[in-house]
Every structure is written in C-alpha cells, then in structure tokens.
Length: 218
Image 1 (cartoon, rainbow, N blue to C red):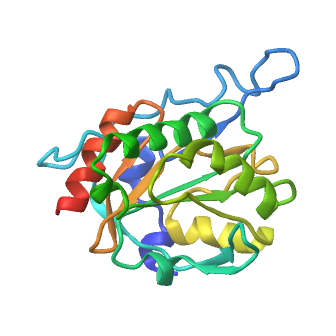
Image 2: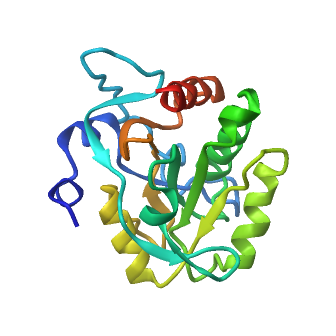
C-alpha cells in the first residue's frame, strides 16, 4: 500500500470523501437525517479548475487489489484496468439511494458519449456488503444500468478483509455498519493511472460525461 493510500489526503476529506449512510426502506425514515449526508461535501478545486467534478490537486494512483468478478473469476484491478480510463465506486446493491443513482448517472453519462469514446471506459463497482452481494446478485444489479452500453460494468466482491484492503488501497474510508455506511464518491482514473477528478451526489450525468471525455481525449 502506498503512503498516499494510507494517509487519506486532507483535500479529499474536505471535498467530501466521507461516509454516508443509506436510508431505511422500512417506514420511509432515514438511517441518518437525509440519508447519505452530503452536507460536508465542499468542492475543493485544483488551481486550474479543469473538471466539472471535484478536482483533486493531489491525484490518487490507481490502486492494486484482487477480488472476485461476477463470473466468479479472480479480478486483479490494477492489471485488468492499467492504462485505461476507469471509474471506481464502492457501494452495495440494496442501497436505496446513492448507489443506484450513481450507477444510473454513469450509464446515462456513457450513453451520451460517442461509442468510440465510451468503449474505452471501464466502470468498476466494488460491493461493501459481500455477505449479500454474491457475484450473481452483482451481475443482475449492474445489468440494470449497462444494458445499452458498449462495455458492461464490472462488479467485484470477495472476503471482507480483501474488500477492506481494496478501500484502503484506493484511499477511501472503510465502510461501516455492514457496508451501509460507505464513501459516497467515485474516482476516475486516466490512462496515466492517476485519478485527478472525483464525483459525488452533486454531480450530474453531464458532468461525468464531460470529464470522462476530457480524460479519454487526454
């Protein structure tokens, strides 16, 4: 694990790379007021303000971790995505708000792009609830969002310890409360294997599409 992954930079803490609780679906009450709490999400921009998402003045390196994909095969994230524009998000399939909204936004964003651009991009969703999210559950869930895209979303699960290590390697806070309290942000890595931009619930499909196009086109 790199030093950067171990020490979660203050800029991302300020930018809202924090934990948000998903709302309850039993009686309409939220697990925390307002469900996922984005109140601390302050957009900290880099000096050039290049992106529609959250500029990261201290880019994150593409992490190295190995989990299990939806076919049941081993998936080495760094090896399989090296040099490729990649979106990375940690969440869980029964989340009632931020996770499906994020996946829908990604699907809409990639659908806006020229297929020649969209097919260069990989979306990777890592579950924070491996007790529930089997490979089969993940595949069924992600197929709701990627059906019309040139490249299917990748879903990853595994032992809890391996998922914890993946979050630490990516530089995001460890999910809590059996995965229900998890990071609300999504990182976008470029061909240089660095993430210079992140997205949260305040970003739109248009924001994501614009930044993905900028990263792909270099």
